Image (cartoon, rainbow, N blue to C red):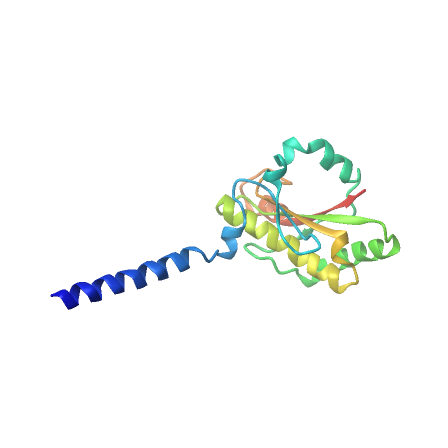
Length: 180
């Protein structure tokens, strides 16, 4: 009986250790804060929690000063539940890359959007993945990381209101905004 208790206590410690180790490993989607917008694409590739800086409302003036008045080109659109850039959308990204290469002081923010299907957390993660996919293509076209930032809007800023595929397809996008 004493040996059984000793074995049980050791197994309990092993399971406790494994449980704590599993809890400490973040899931990629868990790294995106569901309560705030995520800004990524900084020089070190890290995400900056927009909520830590007071949220979009708290920094609206600074954000508007940073973003140019005009938004170049039309958005890059995505298929349902996808962050793969379709071949037909690459030309839009190339035009942005060409404009950035022609103006080496210009930078851009890539806003990733989704339709409203899916949880808020999932849509924030998908919006970030879409923006990062466009960012990666810009990098292959010669644009440096310090000139491209990403912002996941998730489902929060639809381009079109509606609950059908024609509206949803226009909401699954990455928009370009020039930074001043």
